[in-house]
Length: 187
Image (cartoon, rainbow, N blue to C red; front, side, top):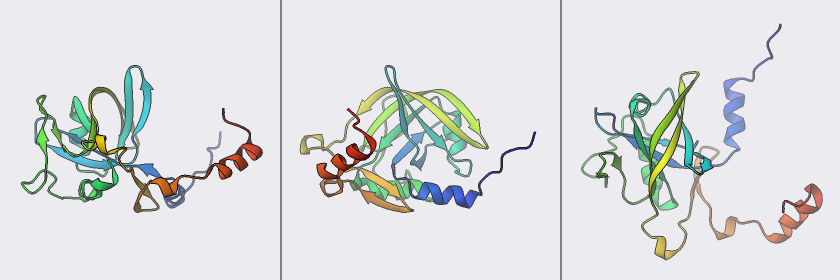
């Protein structure tokens, strides 16, 4: 049986550049010191029990520690955390230095207190071509510290750049009505 032809890595990258994604920073410590990495692959799997997933890149120096950790902290970033997102994405950056606002939870995990975060227990690790997909059950959550000021403005990564979602990015109802006529209602 002949195998299907595959697209090139560049074609795959190009396709995903047009797919916007939320931004998160994952922190962990498996006993050898804290690590952090920026990811755009966080997705909700289940509400009951609350379960999420993310992938850890094979090329990240943080991946071996995140793979070994029993628990992780997933920080869901707002637009005011773009510096943290950049820090977690830079190779060799000092992510837990004295000039960085961070701490340890009472349970020992490293975390950044200024962001919404979910602490979770790693339930499953799936190796995929050197990278790892982690399935995590959320066991503790802390909302954005400015929750009283309204919803935080989400940070999004699209086409190799940082973006925000705000009131001006919402489609008008006339546009959605057009899509309902063309593609059918979704309610």
